Length: 415
Image 1 (cartoon, rainbow, N blue to C red):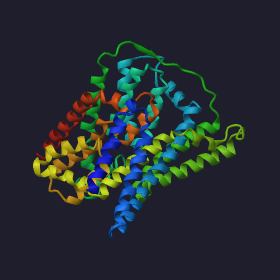
Image 2: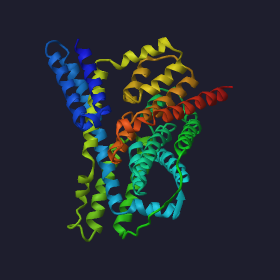
Image 3: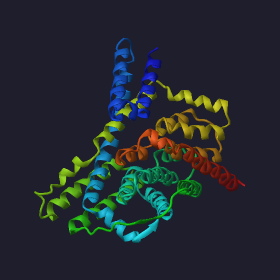
Image 4: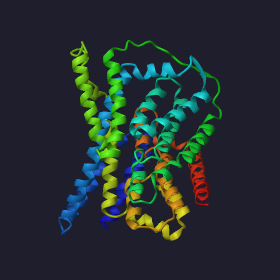
């Protein structure tokens, strides 16, 4: 009985996000309330039996995962907030963009930039930078929505072929289901899916955009912090691959170096305190993440996610993997992938490759299905669950195109 109540709470949280505009309650408030309520119910129920220790242990694991993500986001968002307010991101746009460009060409350039950058950086950082670039263009709201949707899909697609680009890819690799060289082949279908989406979104886009190139007075300290940011991204990847250093730890170290650089190089440190940039972070995004991950952790604790494995008894792995990708837009792909790996389902190389693509890219189908989507929703005014949902068919077509190409490619590699 308790399990069904908890599943009902999870559904209510999802509905609260979907109908945010109708109920006029911020999604962070509803998810946080329902997430904490679910765990309180678990503790009350466990006190009646011997399961209290298990609840405490799983909550501790859940909170550890959440705090790791929170600290990483705080560091990444602080970097981006500083670079954005100092005009570094807009200045970068001035260098790479012509004075005038067609909307269609701009759309494809955005797709390529987001895809490539997410291959180098993590999804959250790539989304923050890409969305900041889009917002600096000053496009009308309806066009900004298209670009934001494309950024989310491109960012999720860009990281799927690298063990440093997506957690689920790393999990499947560590279980020796695929090799690094095999994963690199996923670049082709994932990039093709991005191009398909960009092509679909380009229909109806007419005219050209004049890039507003405003001159910003950029000081040596600003350039130094920009270099610190890029160095942090690179060293995070290297440190994680070679020494398994958590990205959160590397980014916090990078942020502390940023603080020290500003302290010693900035002459007007008292007028523009570097620590103030932490205040510019969207804390409602962090609270939303907290609520969502509490709910996902609760579902994992009551083994509700393991019920999804029945799909593999109903369908062949190729179809089941495709469905899992769609489900990953509603349920966090990390516990979903973990449940699949624990079940030790017997699949071929081709099927593990298709699952890697599906759980990495499928989260793009809904705005709440990935970290990239949640970050974009917090940065782009008016980007809600419902408005993102208007592009669901186009996203599904693009996801399906990439998935089909994965199957064709892996069949070719096996032959």
